[in-house]
Length: 204
Image 1 (tube, rainbow, N blue to C red):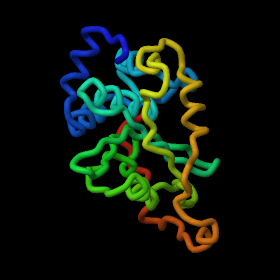
Image 2 (image 1 turned 135 degrees about the vertical axis):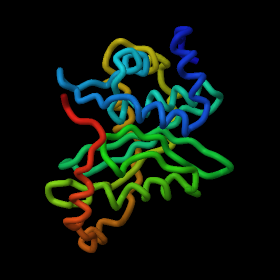
Image 3 (image 1 turned 30 degrees about the vertical axis):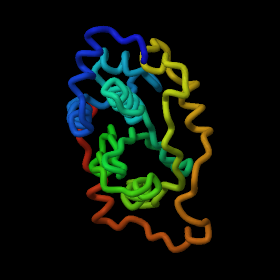
C-alpha cells in the first residue's frame, strides 16, 4: 500500500463504493492543463482539486485499493486523430463496471452489468467520435491493468507519471473489430454530434 497521509486516507476511505468514488470525481473540476500536459499522481490531483481522465482513473483505482479492492485500469485506445481514454475497473458479483472522469456526456460511469471487459469496452464505442467530423475512433483496449505491478510512487509522486503512461500505452491492446469492418461503420449523425458537444466543465 502506498505511504499515504492521514488526510489522504481519510478522504479515500470514505469512498468505499464505486458510486461514491464516481460522485466524488464528478464534483472535481476538470484539469484543462492550462500550463502544459500533466499526468499527476492522486496525491497531486487531490491537492490541486482537478483531474483529467487518466488522473481521475488513478484516484479511483487508489480509492478501490484503500478499500480492499484491486487497483485496475482499462485503457481505451483511439486512432491518432483522437485521444485515448482511461477508466478504473471494478467488479461486482462477477460483472464488470467502470469509474470514469470525463468532461463529456457519454464516456462516463458504467454500472456493473458487463460480463467481460471486452463487453464493457464496447459500451464506449458508439459515442467515441470526433465532434467535428463524426468519425468513430475507438479501436482497441487493454485491461484489466493491475497497478500493483508498478512502483507504488504512482500514488504519491510529485513528478509527472510519464513512465507509467508509456507502460500502459505499450500494453498489448485487443482490437474491437476486424479491419475489414471499418468500411461498414457509420459516422455519428448531426443529432449525435450536437449531443456530443455537451460538456460539464468550462474553461474559466
